[in-house]
Amino acid sequence: MTSSSSAPSGAEVDAAVGAAFTAEWGRIVATMIRLTGDWELAEECAQDAFTQALTSWRRDGVPRRPGAWLTTTARNRAVDRLRRAQTGEMKQRESEMARADDQEHDWGLDGDDSGIEDDRLRLIFTCCHPALALEAQVALTLRTLAGLTTEEIARAFLVPEPTMAKRLVRAKSKIRNAGIPYRVPPAHQLPERTVAVLAVLYLLFNEGYRATAGADLVRQSLCAEAIRLARTLVELMPDEPEARGLLALMLLHDARREARADDRGDLVLLEDQDRSRWNADEIAEGVRELETALRRARPGPYQVQAAIAACHATAASAEMTDWSEIALLYGRLFEMMPTPVVALNRAVAVAMADGPEAGLELVDALDASGVLDGYHLLAATRADFLRRLGRSDEAAAAYRRALELVTSESERRYLAGRLAETGQSPQPLHP
Amino acid sequence: MRYLLLICTDESADAAMSPEEGQARMGAYAAFGQEMTERGVLTGGERLRPTTDATTVQVRDGEVLTADGPFAETKEQIGGFYAVDCADLDEAIAIAAKIPGAQTGTIEVRPIWEM
Image 1 (cartoon, rainbow over the protein chains, first blue to last red):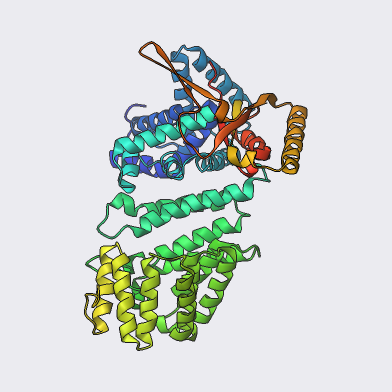
Image 2: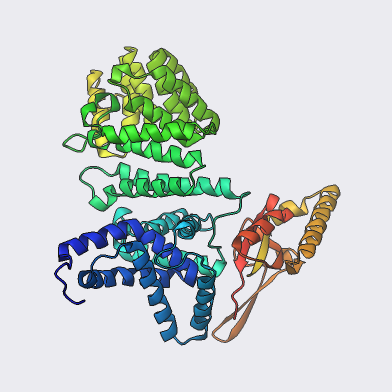
């Protein structure tokens, strides 16, 4: 069947292979790691399978189940490679693989995917094992599960490609040499290990979210990758409300992405954002996911943060925002995560609900505790409350303090603008 | 998998223990040793004399250089070790967490390089 009239066009095949890559890469790598026990080999064979798809599918048409075709091809590739490498270790792997194959109930083109689903969960828990450095966990997750190339990951994290390549190699060799098991952790470890997985996904999302409009597209795509991985996790762990809470949180943040910066790339405050530019579909989906999560009645920090984001995202205008509810939610969040940053956010919400005086009281207490010394947002928040109370001199001093501490250029411009509004000199009078 | 669990604690703090504290610590180690022997994972283990009794040895240009004490000044010193043979790193971490020294010091989990 070399050239039938029904053969798909090159563009059709490219699109089909691209779609299959997005949908199946992580699944195939995860299965190959389980079958071969070799992370490098698993990736290479998965890569080979996609390369072969480009020619085979053009010749034979796109298979009915591309994922199954690709997995079988990758598996055959692994057997070939292991046979050709006649070393003892490789032979042992091959016989292990044959054994694993025998145990596979639904192997082949027509089996269901239940066993394969578990492989992706094994993979994500192994990538996010606490014995690996956090930066290695993130890189490994992007490479093996999301299918980003080493070069793309390096660009996303602003490090040279050889550095990232070394990081990935090192992580994989630690998994092998230190005996990190390839499995979903047992029940008694599952809660804390799940927290670690969620933290990696949220870190990924935030890396992308911080990227400005002018930043590298790969860097911006981290948000989409994080959302995709969170969706997978929700699908694999439907009974874990925090996974769903995290997905909801990401969707609700991501919905505001377009409105978050102006044409110069400067930050636009939530209250000043053009709400018509918010993504209504993402907001609706985020709210739906949050409601599903909350029905389990096992709240956690991601669900509460998503609830806060939902309050903002569903308010028709900045004035309509339910600040009392948000202040209440920050109070809940502080019980779960008693960090100074949460305390600061709570003060902001309280100021919006009950006036700047009430907020200033909380911020002054935080300032006195000294735990946020050197954090520009503490000074900036104080400045904002003082400005709204009409205490211009004190506000100006606080803005100057914030300007000394701020590192981001767009935030600096914003603070300088506010300082100018106080009618005070931009330079400290008594330096 | 075989692992060496290195027990790193602050020697000076260990030396400053009261006899009662020392007794309690010994009891805790005895209980740990018994539990792990029954579990069948323990293949060896020793307590070490403090670093004040240690000698470092290096060979440079064919010459043996010896010196008193360990080379690096660190806050924690290796005070003992266990050798275990268990399923994987997760089990090794679980065992390490049960070593009494983990309460105050650090346990370094080192996979054995199988030759």
